[in-house]
Length: 326
Ligand SMILES: C[S@@+](CC[C@H](N)C(=O)[O-])C[C@H]1O[C@@H](n2cnc3c(N)ncnc32)[C@H](O)[C@@H]1O
Image 1: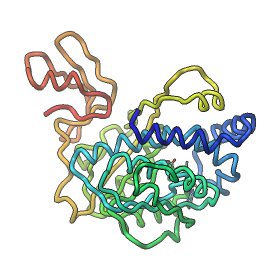
Image 2 (image 1 turned 30 degrees about the vertical axis):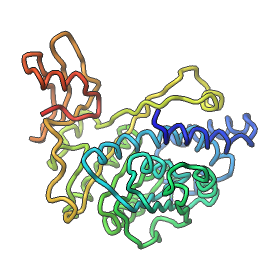
Image 3 (image 1 turned 90 degrees about the horizontal axis):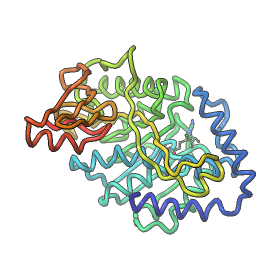
């Protein structure tokens, strides 16, 4: 577990300690049921302190891990943001992830409609070791009337499913108006992927360059036959197991994502080698078999054999969500 993830765990354990376990478990069950039906929220889903605490305890480690996986990749490509805007940031999971990926961050603004989520977010960062995270601002605003200041990095993680089509269009417009690099993360479900496709189309229509996961800007080759999603391994804490039930010590958070950069940030998207690995690779003696999305806009099977020497050695270390060595 990254040090940010374990710091977050500690902060969460302290923050939810005051709530009776029974109430947290009941609120968690309500949230699980609600998030299983993706549709625009008529009223805020995080509607009470106990629901916010339950969300933080059972979802935040997972959403933080998914966003972290994406941001670590951008950091690996040399992206060094100083400022960040977390839209629909709730209790600040994406802000924690950004602090974990970018030592360059100086200013973090988390914006959300729910005051109780913002309050909890503020409490969670109070003892964080990252000075940018400790100083993060948590501000109340609703989609359609978001702060106008720009940022190097703008994130919307696990937000679009709660928005109407008009709100989604407004949020995406705000992302390209305010950000230099924009990241959208959604649950790794067929409908989460649909929403990611919508965000991808928006970025491309504004002339932005895709940074990932797509190795091309053509039509997604998975449309109509599969959905593009990845997984982040999350260790479950004892509280998590108590309030959500289940014995496994980990879970795989499935997520879909897209990241894009404004035209003046990069002249073209980051080169993602020979493509993106879409499933867990099958590793057999002498060969590694991948399902990949390729730079030529196709998707399918790709095999790297031992005869390819260095490329084979690199391929053996690659996992679902990584790029295929070129
Ligand atoms: C599932 S939570 C995700 C929170 C956080 N981004 C994460 O990854 O854990 C969705 C968040 O979007 C916020 N939200 C939904 N509709 C909103 C709106 N119209 N304006 C502002 N925030 C909104 C909710 O209050 C909630 O905090």
